[in-house]
Length: 172
Image (cartoon, rainbow, N blue to C red; front, side):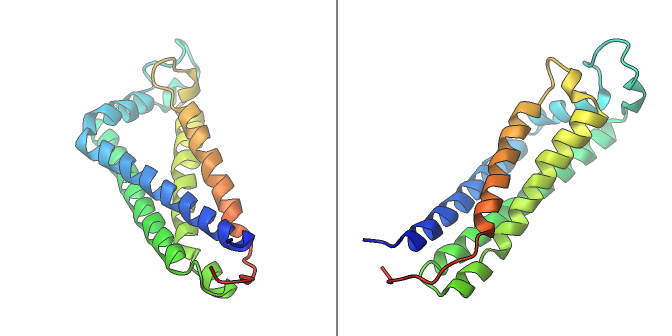
Protein backbone atom coordinates (compact mmCIF):
# COMPACT_ATOMS: atom_id res chain seq x y z
CA UNK A 1 0.00 0.00 0.00
CA UNK A 2 1.24 3.50 -0.82
CA UNK A 3 1.72 6.02 1.98
CA UNK A 4 -0.50 9.07 2.23
CA UNK A 5 2.54 11.30 1.67
CA UNK A 6 3.28 9.53 -1.60
CA UNK A 7 -0.35 9.77 -2.73
CA UNK A 8 -0.35 13.53 -2.07
CA UNK A 9 2.77 13.81 -4.22
CA UNK A 10 0.97 11.93 -6.97
CA UNK A 11 -2.06 14.22 -6.59
CA UNK A 12 0.13 17.32 -6.88
CA UNK A 13 1.84 15.91 -9.95
CA UNK A 14 -1.46 15.03 -11.64
CA UNK A 15 -2.93 18.47 -10.85
CA UNK A 16 0.04 20.30 -12.37
CA UNK A 17 -0.04 17.95 -15.38
CA UNK A 18 -3.74 18.72 -15.87
CA UNK A 19 -3.03 22.46 -15.76
CA UNK A 20 -0.23 22.01 -18.29
CA UNK A 21 -2.55 20.03 -20.57
CA UNK A 22 -5.32 22.61 -20.21
CA UNK A 23 -2.99 25.47 -21.14
CA UNK A 24 -1.53 23.44 -24.01
CA UNK A 25 -5.03 22.91 -25.42
CA UNK A 26 -5.79 26.61 -24.99
CA UNK A 27 -2.62 27.61 -26.86
CA UNK A 28 -3.37 25.03 -29.57
CA UNK A 29 -6.92 26.32 -29.97
CA UNK A 30 -5.89 29.97 -29.97
CA UNK A 31 -3.25 29.40 -32.65
CA UNK A 32 -5.10 26.96 -34.91
CA UNK A 33 -8.41 28.86 -34.66
CA UNK A 34 -6.91 32.31 -34.23
CA UNK A 35 -9.90 34.44 -35.16
CA UNK A 36 -12.46 32.85 -32.84
CA UNK A 37 -10.87 34.21 -29.68
CA UNK A 38 -9.32 37.17 -31.51
CA UNK A 39 -12.86 38.46 -31.99
CA UNK A 40 -13.44 38.02 -28.26
CA UNK A 41 -10.41 40.22 -27.48
CA UNK A 42 -11.47 42.70 -30.18
CA UNK A 43 -15.01 43.15 -28.86
CA UNK A 44 -13.90 43.39 -25.24
CA UNK A 45 -11.38 46.12 -26.14
CA UNK A 46 -13.89 47.88 -28.45
CA UNK A 47 -16.47 47.80 -25.66
CA UNK A 48 -19.11 47.66 -28.37
CA UNK A 49 -21.49 45.38 -26.46
CA UNK A 50 -21.50 47.05 -23.03
CA UNK A 51 -24.55 48.91 -21.71
CA UNK A 52 -25.56 51.73 -24.03
CA UNK A 53 -24.73 55.08 -22.48
CA UNK A 54 -22.18 53.54 -20.11
CA UNK A 55 -19.96 56.25 -18.64
CA UNK A 56 -16.84 54.06 -18.99
CA UNK A 57 -17.04 53.78 -22.77
CA UNK A 58 -14.23 56.34 -23.07
CA UNK A 59 -11.86 53.47 -22.22
CA UNK A 60 -12.56 51.65 -25.50
CA UNK A 61 -9.78 50.99 -27.98
CA UNK A 62 -10.51 51.23 -31.68
CA UNK A 63 -7.15 50.14 -33.12
CA UNK A 64 -7.04 46.65 -34.70
CA UNK A 65 -3.24 46.52 -34.33
CA UNK A 66 -3.72 46.68 -30.54
CA UNK A 67 -6.29 43.86 -30.63
CA UNK A 68 -3.75 41.63 -32.38
CA UNK A 69 -0.95 42.76 -30.05
CA UNK A 70 -3.03 42.01 -26.96
CA UNK A 71 -4.13 38.65 -28.29
CA UNK A 72 -0.62 37.60 -29.33
CA UNK A 73 0.67 38.64 -25.89
CA UNK A 74 -2.06 36.52 -24.32
CA UNK A 75 -1.13 33.49 -26.44
CA UNK A 76 2.58 33.99 -25.65
CA UNK A 77 1.85 34.08 -21.90
CA UNK A 78 -0.29 30.96 -22.22
CA UNK A 79 2.59 29.24 -24.07
CA UNK A 80 5.07 30.16 -21.34
CA UNK A 81 2.58 28.91 -18.75
CA UNK A 82 2.27 25.65 -20.67
CA UNK A 83 6.04 25.18 -20.81
CA UNK A 84 6.46 25.90 -17.09
CA UNK A 85 3.63 23.59 -16.02
CA UNK A 86 4.74 20.73 -18.26
CA UNK A 87 8.35 21.08 -17.10
CA UNK A 88 7.09 21.36 -13.53
CA UNK A 89 4.98 18.23 -13.81
CA UNK A 90 7.93 16.34 -15.31
CA UNK A 91 10.19 17.42 -12.42
CA UNK A 92 7.54 16.43 -9.88
CA UNK A 93 7.13 13.04 -11.55
CA UNK A 94 10.89 12.55 -11.60
CA UNK A 95 11.10 13.34 -7.89
CA UNK A 96 8.05 11.40 -6.66
CA UNK A 97 10.22 9.04 -4.62
CA UNK A 98 12.89 11.58 -3.70
CA UNK A 99 13.42 13.06 -0.27
CA UNK A 100 11.09 15.82 0.92
CA UNK A 101 13.52 18.66 0.20
CA UNK A 102 14.07 17.50 -3.41
CA UNK A 103 10.37 17.04 -4.11
CA UNK A 104 9.54 20.43 -2.63
CA UNK A 105 12.28 22.07 -4.71
CA UNK A 106 10.89 20.41 -7.84
CA UNK A 107 7.72 22.51 -7.48
CA UNK A 108 9.38 25.74 -8.65
CA UNK A 109 8.51 25.49 -12.35
CA UNK A 110 4.93 24.52 -11.53
CA UNK A 111 4.56 27.49 -9.19
CA UNK A 112 5.85 29.84 -11.90
CA UNK A 113 3.45 28.37 -14.49
CA UNK A 114 0.45 28.57 -12.18
CA UNK A 115 1.36 32.15 -11.22
CA UNK A 116 1.43 33.08 -14.91
CA UNK A 117 -2.01 31.49 -15.25
CA UNK A 118 -3.34 33.53 -12.33
CA UNK A 119 -1.87 36.61 -13.98
CA UNK A 120 -3.62 35.78 -17.28
CA UNK A 121 -7.07 34.92 -15.94
CA UNK A 122 -7.25 37.16 -12.89
CA UNK A 123 -5.29 40.23 -13.92
CA UNK A 124 -6.01 39.89 -17.64
CA UNK A 125 -9.62 38.73 -17.67
CA UNK A 126 -11.06 39.73 -14.29
CA UNK A 127 -9.24 43.02 -13.68
CA UNK A 128 -8.42 44.42 -17.13
CA UNK A 129 -11.18 42.80 -19.20
CA UNK A 130 -13.86 42.69 -16.52
CA UNK A 131 -13.31 45.98 -14.76
CA UNK A 132 -11.36 48.28 -17.09
CA UNK A 133 -13.15 47.27 -20.29
CA UNK A 134 -16.44 46.55 -18.44
CA UNK A 135 -16.72 43.05 -19.87
CA UNK A 136 -19.21 42.29 -17.09
CA UNK A 137 -21.70 44.54 -18.90
CA UNK A 138 -21.64 42.45 -22.08
CA UNK A 139 -24.22 39.74 -22.66
CA UNK A 140 -22.20 38.38 -25.62
CA UNK A 141 -18.47 38.87 -24.96
CA UNK A 142 -18.23 38.06 -21.26
CA UNK A 143 -15.56 35.58 -20.19
CA UNK A 144 -15.74 36.25 -16.45
CA UNK A 145 -17.40 32.95 -15.56
CA UNK A 146 -14.74 30.90 -17.31
CA UNK A 147 -11.97 33.08 -15.86
CA UNK A 148 -13.33 32.66 -12.32
CA UNK A 149 -13.47 28.88 -12.75
CA UNK A 150 -9.88 28.73 -14.01
CA UNK A 151 -8.54 31.11 -11.35
CA UNK A 152 -10.26 29.10 -8.60
CA UNK A 153 -8.64 25.88 -9.80
CA UNK A 154 -5.22 27.52 -10.18
CA UNK A 155 -5.31 29.04 -6.70
CA UNK A 156 -6.39 25.76 -5.12
CA UNK A 157 -3.53 23.90 -6.82
CA UNK A 158 -1.08 26.62 -5.80
CA UNK A 159 -2.20 26.17 -2.18
CA UNK A 160 -1.84 22.39 -2.49
CA UNK A 161 1.67 22.81 -3.87
CA UNK A 162 2.58 25.16 -1.03
CA UNK A 163 2.28 22.42 1.59
CA UNK A 164 5.72 21.18 2.52
CA UNK A 165 6.56 17.57 2.00
CA UNK A 166 7.04 15.00 4.70
CA UNK A 167 9.58 12.25 4.30
CA UNK A 168 8.11 9.12 2.78
CA UNK A 169 7.55 6.51 5.46
CA UNK A 170 8.22 3.72 3.05
CA UNK A 171 9.23 3.99 -0.57
CA UNK A 172 6.66 2.25 -2.74
